[in-house]
Amino acid sequence: MNEHVPTVRPDTVTAAAYAPAPLEPYAPAPAAVELAAERGPVVWVPDAYGRMVPMPKHLAPPPIVRPEPRDLTPLPLLDPIAQRFIGAGIGGGTLAAGVGWGVGEVINAAAGFTSGAAIWIALTVLAWRMPARSLADGRRGSTVNIRKAVIKRSHFHG
Image (cartoon, rainbow, N blue to C red; front, top):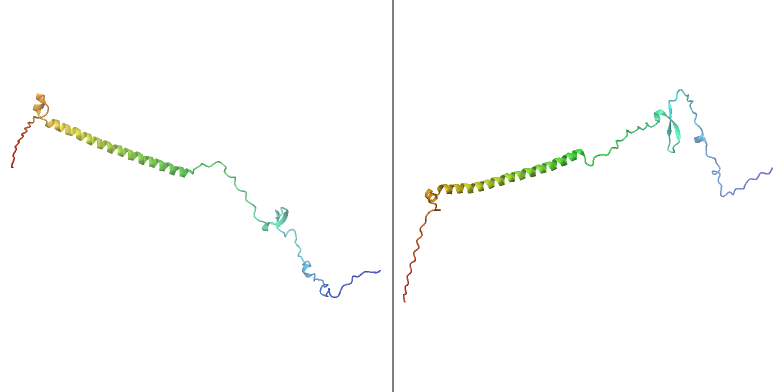
């Protein structure tokens, strides 16, 4: 039989190129025998690609806790505490305005009463001091005599 061996040019091939790499790193290490009774419980967990893979239970991630269902009832537009603050502010402002208006009315009434009362007191005093004879005669007021004297002198010094 005639086997064909390709010729290799001596300038392109070196002796180190054909030396195979050692196979020791790839050799299987002597494995210890593991009995089923010695192994702990195994759980199946999904990997990054969604496949289920076995894993020792003590190395598995903790299970995801299911969240409690949310309350989906609609909330008020304003917080109840904010509503109380707004109500207190509006009520306090209304109270202050009402008190101020009421105090103004009381002061106006007092001013009106005092000026009206002063007029009535003055009229009462004048009526009291009016002479009794003028009231009895039917004449009004007191008698006043007016005397007017006109003195006219002409002098010419000239």
